[in-house]
Length: 263
Image (cartoon, one colour):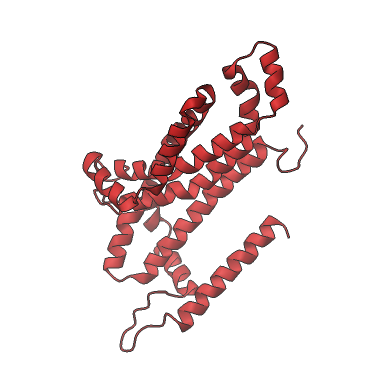
């Protein structure tokens, strides 16, 4: 079964389960018309009625935060992973920092970050806390993926570079970066939805008036479950599009991994 067929089948199963649960388990309580899980048809109808303009202004801010966090978090992670190859003795320290960053409770970190970094400076600006949590969400995955990729370098190729007088820096540029490309790019692909989720969680800390997180808080306060699920659906769509774009980049940059010939 191809990936596209598997994706379509998986999406169909999720939508069917969603519809079944909304029609059986999550029905409105007696005497009310509120349902915590509206049907897919109701959510899609709400999206069409509202139009894309109603959601783009808030998603634009969150996507910007996710992109900034993605760049900062992955940039620092790749820099540390490359430094480990030049200074192997610091590997335990870098690994421990990555593990600790992954285990930190987001709520506690977000509460501290909102005090130290603040939020959006003005309406429509990205929140510094959301950017920080987006960067934190991708850091561990990229560090681990990059270290594993750098270790995948062929030992014989490293020996050839060493024989011809190349040092660790030359090995990194000539051999390890090429060998690490598939693992690093796969880590970056996984980091895309993580960055978006981190940005949304950062927005829940407050100090922003136009974003996905604050919009969800307002909709939940108004018991507008249909629009809440509409935002959920759009969040999933944004994450999937970003994941697919990086996946396409992976296939273009590392065609040998996908089994295609290199021109």
